[in-house]
Structures are given as structure tokens and as C-alpha cells.
Length: 134
Image (cartoon, rainbow, N blue to C red; front, side, top):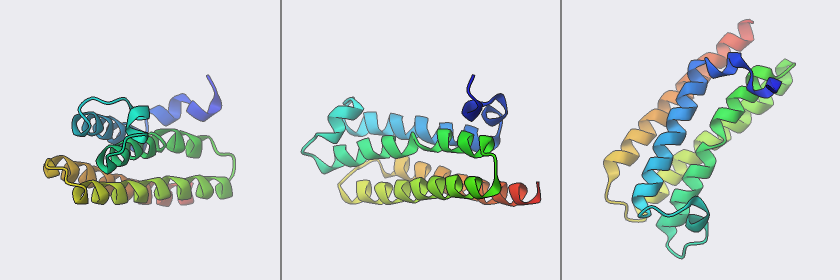
């Protein structure tokens, strides 16, 4: 097993939350696009489909990003990787907003995802504090 995906990273609450966000965004994208494949979403003429595909792709970056922070050798590298995770999280929020404006009727799903992303952001902030103390 590679060091980037060590046993330790799988058991962090932040990693598990990242997986939850991915699973939720994938399920939402499938629902919003009538079961299109992620590749089909990216090439669709419908903005809603493209946003849904982007949502899946951005959320897919979170869990490996967390695992890479756990395996980083120095503090500077960890901060750079955390910055990338935060950027992906911010992009997810923007994509949720874009989906709302594109006419997605199931706004309760988007609200749930936004709540999970907000919780993830708080978990990342707490995690950074723990990393600083370590």
C-alpha cells in the first residue's frame, strides 16, 4: 500500500467526511442528470449536467487530498495540500450555487450537500489546529 493512502488516513474523521461528500454529490449528480455517466455530463449541452459533472469531479479530490496531507513529510507541504482541499471545497460551494440557478428543483439535496461541505470546512479548520500542535 502506498504511503499516500496509509491506514492512518482512512480512519480520520475528515477523510470519512470527504468520502460522504463524494458519495452524496455522485448520487445527486446521477439524480439531476437522469443517470448520465460523469463523462457524458461534461460534454452535455445542458449547463445543469455540466455543473453536476463538475460537482462529482471536485468532490472526488477531497479524500485523496486528505490522505496526502496525512502522508506529507513537512509542515509546508501539508499547508499546500490543505490549500488545495480548501480550494476544492470552495469550488463545490460555487457549483451548488450554479446548480440552484440552473433550475434544479431538488433544492433540499443541495442544502444537505452545502451543510456537509460547511461541516467539512469546520473539520479541516480544527484539523489544521491539531496539525500545528503536533
